[in-house]
Image (cartoon, rainbow, N blue to C red):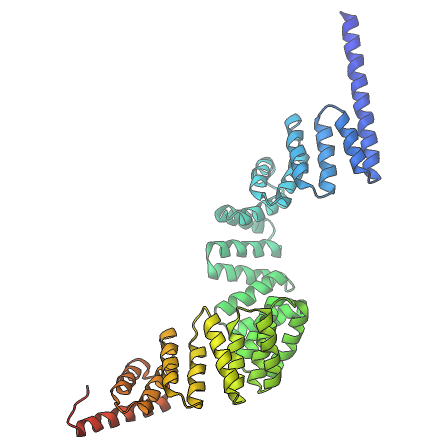
Length: 416
């Protein structure tokens, strides 16, 4: 009996020594970058916690997170090891399977709630997985433990954004900024939030602060450019656009806006260059053709104007009232009032809030038809709908209504 026990012990010792030798060889090979040979060496031995763990470490080092996770899952079946579980959670996150990482963090934190690093990681996972209530409690707890940490306040702001709570969100980002005036993500969020609220002054403040930290940030540059465009500071906007064009050449925003800026500055040749470039870069951007039509009208190139407006109306999937208005103006300029009438009518159909389209439809009808009843009805509709839009047009429309009614009254007919 004693002899059998001794033999068994010797076998165990030999087996352990062999496995230890295998691990030593695998470690040595891995240290030299021979990871394939190291894996072969590890596969020689029977699966244990350590063989699976070391295999997982090798796969993780070459970014094969799927196999790393697989071997870590096997490793923890041999031993309930916290280090292995944390590494498994890390690999789940790398695989975009953060939902699987959550219960691992929750289990560990149930034993050690003071691990703020793990609490922070778990809070971020809650946000990714839209677990807003849990995320809110986590970051409020973290803030109570360390009120100076700007990242805690920032992520609490993200939680409020997830819940659609605008004011608490903005307040959290402001708190973040107060804690760290260089917190770029908070500054960017504040610029976008104030822009959505149409608070131009606050938007401008945070746009400037953000660009001072990162002049190449695309969204902040766009916010700056849009504000300059609204303020009609076209010359000031152009350097920003030229810089933005070097940052992201695939984006058509800078090409489109450069065309618009030069158009507003009456630099028609430059505007034309950018709009033509835009038609090649983005074949669905019908506004490029619209502006080329406008430029052709200014240059009295009516054939080019007609062609570009027609292309714009055929390509456009949004409201195309501007394009039909352009066609109508072109037809008037080329003495084709009947076609102009159709175009103005289409413009008003596209956008019932376009008072200029209705006015042009009424005015062209008045000039074209001997019978003024059609124009009269359009004028009445204009006054009833757009009485407060344009004082000059209003005065003209009221005068024409009065004159037409008087003319028909003289003929013995009363118009309502």
